[in-house]
Image (tube, rainbow, N blue to C red; front, side):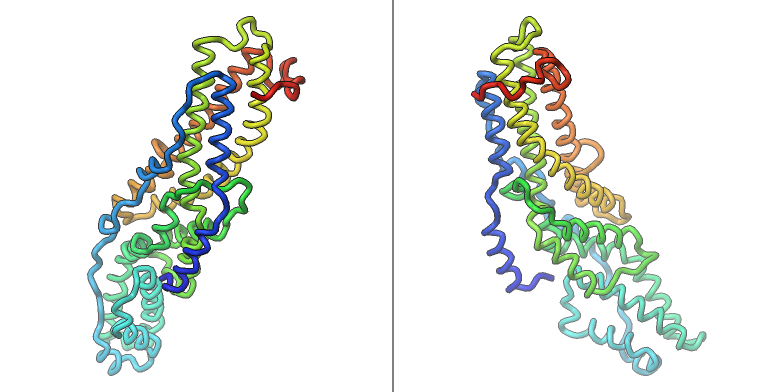
Length: 357
């Protein structure tokens, strides 16, 4: 649905995007943690690891839908009172109509079914055309869910939004609510089929455009994967230090403990944690929309499995990110508590006096 000139414009704009400071923030935090703990270097996040969240091939996500058509000659003879239906069928039989993109076909099928519903009252009850149109409408309604999934799976807009990116979400970037709203709206449309007909192409096109115009879908996937790596690596450093060599053997603050407290205050609570909150807030809306999509009837197996890997309620990238976040908070709490330096303890009041490594 995206036109070539528009594709070029969006590509050029994407190349001039903000610096990749989301990954830089995580790298800096992990390096400081390593130095303060005298730990060996932890392997940096490799963005290529996010390739495991690549969409399955389009051929695995597209369904074959039989063509159901009616002769235009019958309509010219018997349906002179249904000019809109005549027009739609004529358009579909034209050279351009035969090349409708999957997302355009979804809007067309909604328009066609509305035109049939409007036409039927004008036909005689014993009309053979009325029976034909009723049968056609019934069959096409049964196909709507497959048409919907082909509209998503066959569109470069949907693929673009769910494709992992080289960059993570930038720090303090403005939320792209248009793309999330579009994803939620498309999920709502699919969830009400076939009882409610899909909207016209003129209403669908801005939704697909919003998905393509946004870089934040792919950046969010990369942010979740990179933060999962950073948080688990940081937790491993903190946990190993407590197991191998206690930071504060007597349970009282030591110079090294003060340094770690300063890292916590300045670079976790003051740096990484706000970024985590930003990613988590956007991720909740993103996950809710993908879960809604996943529950729509007729979803191809490859698509359902991919959405499960990304945002499922178990064993998904989203759940692994949430688990890594909780693990890291617990690791910090345990370490600071062991030195009497956690929030609420006496040593917390001197948190700003630690030295930075």
